[in-house]
Image (cartoon, rainbow, N blue to C red):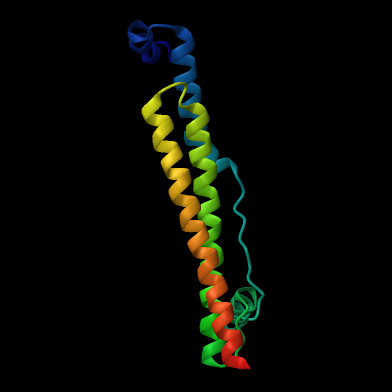
Length: 139
């Protein structure tokens, strides 16, 4: 063993680094064999149960007509876009705080926040417009 480690010790800058490398190799080689194999058995209702569950999450039903299904998907997309806009505003706010006096970075973050707020307003107006048109069409 000493003959194997001697060339490594002469090239290593520190015995601590050599120990860490050898420990990493040992763990990397031995860990897959030490863990027991665990299998998961699916006892669910199959593909149809999965489709029905996804439809219930999205608010879509088999009994709905095409118009209601399209409206549900449209509202889902608009809500998702609003969520993305809020996340972009938070990220731009973090960039504004972290800019540390760099005027270009501050201006860029302010523009991102401004444009995202305009986009969020457009998203909310689009949702309101769709609701108005749907309500007018139903009455």
